[in-house]
Image (cartoon, rainbow, N blue to C red; front, side, top):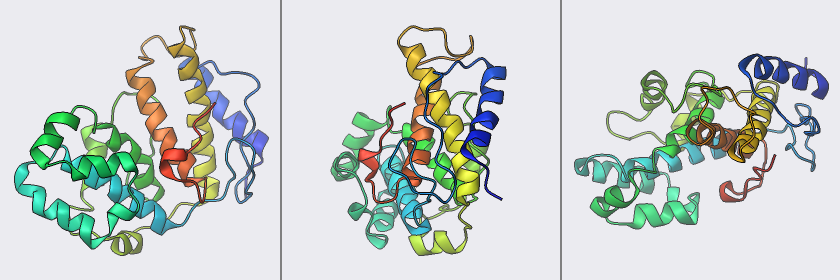
Length: 235
């Protein structure tokens, strides 16, 4: 049975308060699962599994191109060609994968790791990883390991194969997690402006960046028809 918007928000606020997050009182309630709405947060309709799998692989290819060893260049290129990933990449991602690999590593390796934060909720939605969390810093090796098994050792995974081996979570599962990250993101934004709205051991920039990137994926999954780079991340 679907939870009401108010129930979802109450479930969201309990752990946030316990952790020490302070959010704005007037944040709109989440859309109820299965209901598509125009107001923010986005409607509770989940986009197709094929789109989620394609976005996951586009992020993977971008990350790998700017971080993996040179000898993996052919298999990363094969992954992109086999799945026609350029068609679903953002302009920024296309620039990265079009850059000669050695140059891409030099220029983008320090920042491309954020793609792993984006990948985590997508993998979770496909039931390939543990539930994303709002604390604890950047993605840890155990979670990364739960994700990478889908494409190792040779990056031969396909969009259709990924969908076949996965079971897409329902809106009943995704909407509540999105609301948690949506509200946490509001506290992060306030903390980045100098307010005391996050736990004392929470870095507004580093930890807040993880919340931002994970929230990006959750919001995008609940925004059918919206491009990745046009996802509304306002709070």
